[in-house]
Image 1: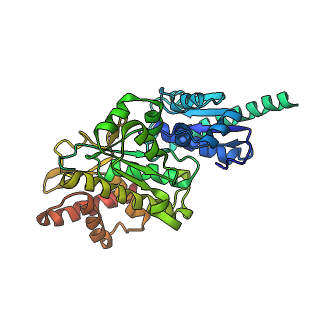
Image 2 (image 1 turned 120 degrees about the horizontal axis):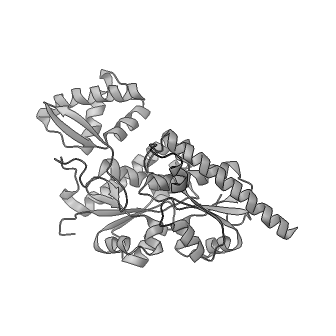
Image 3 (image 1 turned 180 degrees about the vertical axis):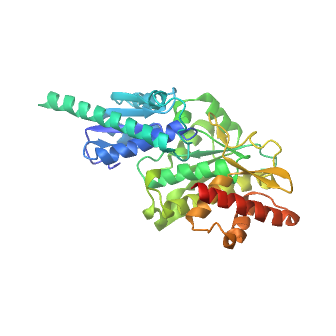
Length: 142
Length: 230
C-alpha cells in the first residue's frame, strides 16, 4: 500500500477523522480492504493529497477512488474531488451505523465489537465497489 | 509564552499509508484522553485543510503542536499554510527510530510494540504541552470531572475513572486507559502491583502524601475489578 509506482484498480481513501469513532471506523475499514483486496485496491494519505503532493494527486487523478467518510462534512469525498480525482463510490460511515442504531461502537481510540462489525460491513461495501469499478474499467479497456 | 495558555491544539497527520500514522493518531488520542485532557483539544486535519474556518481560527489563536508520522510533515505544513507557525512539531518516525518496525497500521493488529510506541510519542506530546502551558499544564483535580475534558471540535468527554478516597468521590482522567496499559504490561491484579499502580497514576493525577495509602487501596481494588471484567 502506498507505493506510488504501483498501478491499482481503485484507491480507497478514508477521512480518518480523529475526533470521533466514525473516523476510526473509516480508517480501519480501509485497512481491512487492503487485506481483502490487496491486488486491486490501494490507499493514499488524505493529508498528503490535500497538502498538494504532486505524486499523490497524479495517482488520484488516474485511478478511480472510493471514499469513506465518517461525518456529513465529507472531507475525503470533497478533497478527492478538489484534487481532480474521480469518485467511483462515496461511502458514508454514518449510513452503516444507522443499521445498528443504539449500539455502542467504541470511541475514536478503540472500537467495540459492534464497531468492528460496522468496519466489516464498510469494508465489504468498499470491496464490492472496487470489484464493480474494476469490471467497468475492464469492459472499457476490453 | 508569557501568559497562561487555555488550550493547546494537537494535530495529527492522517498517515493512512504507514504505521507511524496510526501511532501519531493514537498518541494524540492518549494525550487528549489520559495525559493532558484539560489542556488539549484536537483538530481534524482533513477538515482543517478543506477550509473549515473554525478549525483554522483556533489554530491561529492558540498554540498548536503537530504530530506527523513521517518527514513529509503534512500536519505541520498544512497548519502553517493556513494558520501560521506551529508551536512544536513532532515526527513519529524520528521519535521511534527502529521501534517503528514492529508497529501496525490497524489497531486490530496492535501489540506490545504499538502500545509502547504510542506511550512514548504521547509522553513527548505531553512534555510539549507542559512546555507551552508551563505550570498550567499539570492536571488539576476537577470538581466537574467531565467539563472541558478531552475533546475535539466535535468530540465528547474522555474516559474517566472514579474512586472513593476517604469517603469522597475522586475522578481520575484516563484511568481505564492506565489500567489497560498496565494490564498489557503484565501487572498482576494482586498486591504485588500496588506500588507500580500508585506510581503510574501519580504521573497523571496529583496525590498528596497523606492520601497515598487510601489511593493505594482504592486503586488496587479498582484494578482488580478491571482485570476481572477483561
